[in-house]
Amino acid sequence: MKLLVKNIKKLVQVEEEPIKWVAGADMAKLNCIDDAFLLISEGKIEDFGTMANMPNFDDSEGVDVMQEIDASGRMVFPSFCDSHTHLIYAGSREIEYSDKIKGLSYEEIAKRGGGILNSAERMHEATEEELYESAMERIHEIISLGTGAVEIKSGYGLTVEDELKMLRVIKRLKETTPLQIKSSFLGAHAVSAEYKGRQSEYVDMVISEMIPMVAAEDLADYIDVFCDKGFFTVEETDRILNAGMKHGMRPKIHANELDYSGGIQVGVKYNALSVDHLEFVGDAEIESLKGSETMPTVLPGAAFFLNMVCSPVRKMIDAGLPVALASDFNPGSSPSGNMKFILSLACINYKMLPQEAINATTINSAYAMGLQDEVGSIARGKIANVFITKEIPSIEFMPYAYGSNLVDTVILNGQVL
Image (cartoon, rainbow, N blue to C red):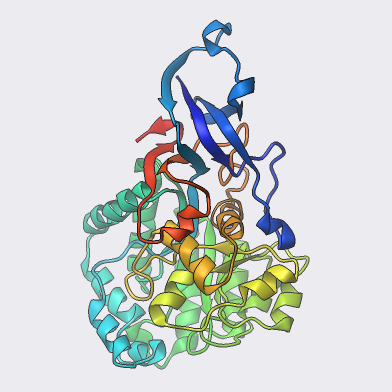
């Protein structure tokens, strides 16, 4: 079945020759086609161009356009790619939100048994079915807001059984939703209450028990570690990544959210697909990223919600680096998967141009989850994950109208939802 979207006011993020990412000054460039058409066939993008050059499909042999959408006055974007989330959780943490307002820090809340340990306790009590049903509600929400691909982490289990439980739910979501989903094993998100004061023993357990069992069931695409002040050290991260890589899991790293931790450097050392958070980035970190295959990924929602210092995105771009943006959707520090709001935060708080922010939430964030060959841009042969906007005057209106849902129609895998 074919789908023709015609009279598109602007077709955004078009690639004639697909690339893996956009970096440096090129992030301010966004290739678009005005007055365009988009032809989708068998779930893939088959063709696109200007309306003036659109073939007469009615007369074309072998072309059977079964469905047409007139997008007059509206734009078509590639779906957002959200490369860092924790959207499987059992219950919200709004009480901690009040604690933050009262002045308690992220670390102080964690030391009192809040934060990740709070979510771990609730995770232990929840069934797989309960977790799946609540996650599906969040999946439907992010789809309606324009997301077409998402990475989901474990990390609220902190025991072998509960980490596996989370990862099995992610696997089920992969099988039952139209999203492209990648899974990350994050057993080293925090030290469980059972191992309090025995962090090295917990690390040993992650390496000797968790990782082999995750690999045996083929439950994770990537392995992640929270390498930061008050969490896991560079040496511990080094050991965990080595073990994960031996079982076929490429690294992704939580790094430098709370301080200069060395997490970026250890991520680059092990060819991490991405290093994420990055509130604390200096010259040494930028130099380590230059020439690497590691995507710097910034999480504006977490910095906004925690009222933290913003990552030096302009400095990274000016140094020629690519930058990706993701939501960090989770119950404690970023309870939203709205990638359009991430666009707005990028422009307002990080001084990114709208074009840079769009590149960072599409092609670059697709790379940060290993999907740049499949999604993240309008290119022939890529999966047809796109959304049609409501009538808007310009691409700049997307981040400008920060509180409005401007998504009118969602198309995933070539299917109108």
